[in-house]
Length: 323
Ligand code: MEV
Image 1 (tube, rainbow, N blue to C red):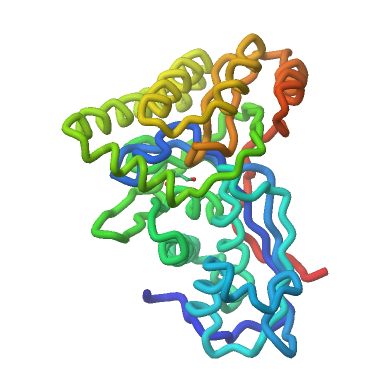
Image 2 (cartoon, rainbow, N blue to C red; image 1 turned 60 degrees about the vertical axis):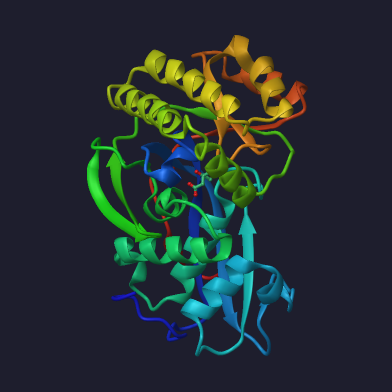
């Protein structure tokens, strides 16, 4: 990887933060080259890195063995650096489909890389994607790009202003910035954790069936229509394509009975809703009916979810003064 120096030359202590993400269209299919629309959520992970006698993550000295994201980042970005104590605090629930690992990687990379790396976001996005791929084994650069860039992004779509191209696994993904429509969304965590890698592999197996290419085309068409609708500020169009996307995700088996129950519970107060992220548990995202946001939150809480209103984060990964 050119351009971003590795190896522990950062002055410590150092601190950085990065947002998680919410996918509106195209999860799973984006891994196979179809379009995706997502935005960075205004919920962040913040890390503080200090020199220490031994390397720990939140006081755990074994984290570099048990946490593949932490291990991958240390090996790639801090190979010749001294032991460090890393503290990570996040408002993102883990394994919930909201990009907690991408946010952690983007914040940690920003804190570990030499000062100024956040000023070269294309390199940082490529670096974070490679780390996530290494730790997870599968995936697309959507999550890590959102954590690095902030705002609304498209992947593999002609819509939006070109940001960067990410390479890996014999593929290239075009990432673009779309204007923020300023909408408030509700994300609701089902409380059912899931493994992104397992869900991504299950989806890939499903695409091996004879109808795989046609299925991928259907995902792509929905995402293109959804992206066009969001770009023209058409809430009804976005809501319609969210329902279509959910029908496809259900058909390929990455929904979950808990997610379906939440979608049913929120329906009267929602313009549109679908699962977000890898599915098989995790979270749903809701476009609430105007004026019925509180009702949507109440319906989801009553159905047993943890709902929170989110907007797009205007900022991506950034260094912050250590506390
Ligand atoms: C996970 O947040 C989104 C997936 O599409 C995987 C990926 O794009 O890396 C399921």
